[in-house]
Image (cartoon, rainbow, N blue to C red; front, side):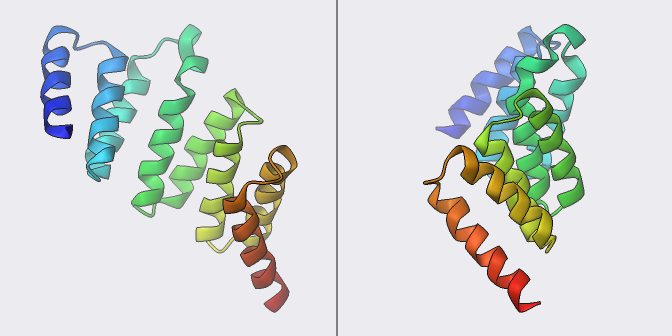
Length: 143
C-alpha cells in the first residue's frame, strides 16, 4: 500500500530530516507510483546527505536515480547514474543491462551490444539481454 508507505515515510522525515535512508525510501515510494520527477528529487537529495565514507553503500540509489532519468527519457543523465553505480559494482548484471538498454533506447547500437555482451558473459542465460542483444545485432546488420 503506497499511500500508507508514503504517510509512514513522511512521518519518519519529520523525525529524521537529515537521514538519507528516509529520502531514499520516499524516492522508492514515488518511483513505484510512477511519479518519476518526485522520485528523482528524493534520490538526488539522498545523495546530498551521504558521507564520502559511505558512498559505496548507496549503489542502489544511483541505479534507482538512473531508472528515473531513463523513464523520463533523459538518457544521458541515466547513463551517468548507471556508470556511478558500475564504478561501485563493476560486474553487477543489472547495472550493465541498464546501461545496455539505455544505450539501445538512444539508438547507440554499438555501445548497447558491448554492454549486452558484458551481461551475457556473466549470465549467459539472461533471456532479456539475449533478446535485446539479438535485436541490436539485427539493427546493426541492417544499417
